[in-house]
Length: 67
Length: 191
Image 1 (cartoon, chains in turn orange, cyan):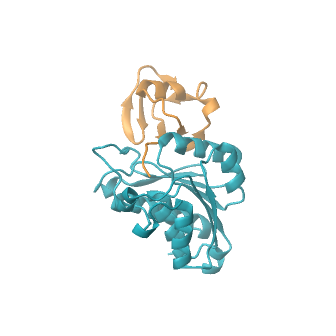
Image 2 (cartoon, rainbow over the protein chains, first blue to last red):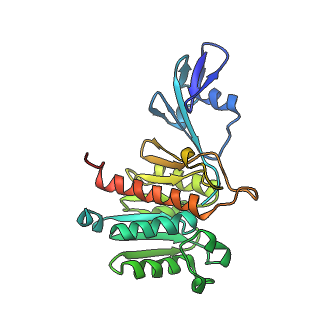
């Protein structure tokens, strides 16, 4: 399946995955991650069950230090 | 416009490179009231990017910033919190603000504040910054909105020995944060 993650095309195995698995595939384990799929916020407690399908646009935010 | 802004209170969490520059930009814009929190004192090393002056070295940042703002516009009301912000103190100090600006340095502290605000300060827009180290790369600075959270920066360049925070890029992001606050308070520009 093919999605975009932060506007960058990503190839993932299978036909569907979950929001949590997308983050796991990227190795993201930051202290705060906020996700949107096709423009809609996906709360953290819904990541396990939220299905991501071919063609979905995933936006995920994490924080880096500096201020 | 000024009349609307005079009636607004904006919270600024952190008074370093982001917070000091953002707060001064908001004061110059005519915001009526600012609530500023920081635990640190002004050091000479801060003067490379923060809105302080040599004669303020050694003073608590929140006091120094209050004085700077008073010199710009004594009508701006400034409430200060001189200490470390944790979830409870964040809720107590910032409750009632029209917008909260996240201006911390450390990514973990940023995460704590944003999570606290989203969980415990209902309806309050939060304007955060992530990715402002180094120089150049203006074209990488972006604004992304996730519900009532706006994040400004390149989301990539954290500070390191090779990539220090520097006045132009930190100041650019701080002013973009202030600009986003104005947009939230005034609504979009016409035309």
